[in-house]
Amino acid sequence: MDMEKVPGGGPGSGPGSGSMPPALPTVRLGTAEVSRLIIGGNPFSGNSHVNGEMDREMIDYFTLANIKHTLFRCMENGINTMLLRMDEHIMRMIHEFRAEGGRMHWIAQTAPEMGSLEGNIARAMRLKPVAIYHHGTITDHYYKRQEFGELRRRLEIIRKTGLPVGLGTHMPEVVRYAEENGLGADFYMLSVYNLSRADRVSSAVTGIANSNEPFFEEDIPVMYQTLRSVDKPCLAFKILGSTRRCSTQEAVRAAFDEAFASIKPTDAVVVGMFPRDLDQPALNSRYTREAIQKAADSRHASG
Image 1 (cartoon, rainbow, N blue to C red):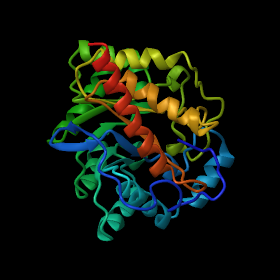
Image 2: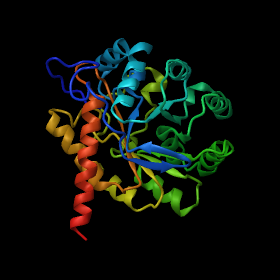
Image 3: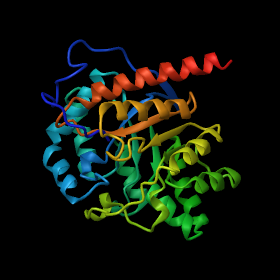
Image 4: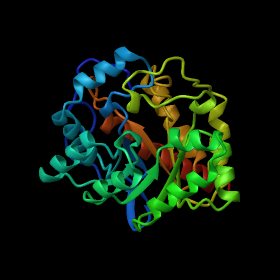
């Protein structure tokens, strides 16, 4: 999530606010062609992974109107996919967004506070997601307690929808286990930081900001290596470290360059955006185009 402030920023301003750029490059996820930059939903729910003050700033900013405005800016900048929770707040917003002409693919994240997984999925299916993935913090909870049967059961429930089944995690070892034991994931949603070093409950569930989360830079190459080791599509998230790699726009650009140099051509990145102070959909779309081209040039040069 890019948080650098610049003068004159804000929704609808900055690069890309004029003529609409072409669609971003896409990858296939099931039957959908999803943009290689996907907007994530943590900021919409006030989940900053920074502190309570920033959580409140996000909640204050992200009225339903501003969430929808952000998504329309994404569309205008070639981003065609949103990865958002299956909670009542977000699902109501998606309904309104589409009624107002919004056209984006929805990759749905399970929301544990919604009760039974079956009920949560049934409500989400009314809004026609293109894929559903199992929330990473919950995945890691079951993995660390060696409740592998329960994790498999939950993925099988998602499988019954007929949609691509995703497995979210912050832990490289979860990916290895899932692949070696045929857990049943069609794609992975992978944090480049292992926030599950410590037991925790997502602040999106508790409403309380988590403090001192373990954002360790040494985790990044490990997860990228894990991502490249599997043939299935992977979605890399937290590439900006929830603002920790956003001190300048050059730092943000460098993180995008690193991500696309490290992931497979069949993969994408998921980035939360907080465009209160600058037009992040336009900037991040530009950095994605540049980074994809740099990665392609590098592969071509290396033979």
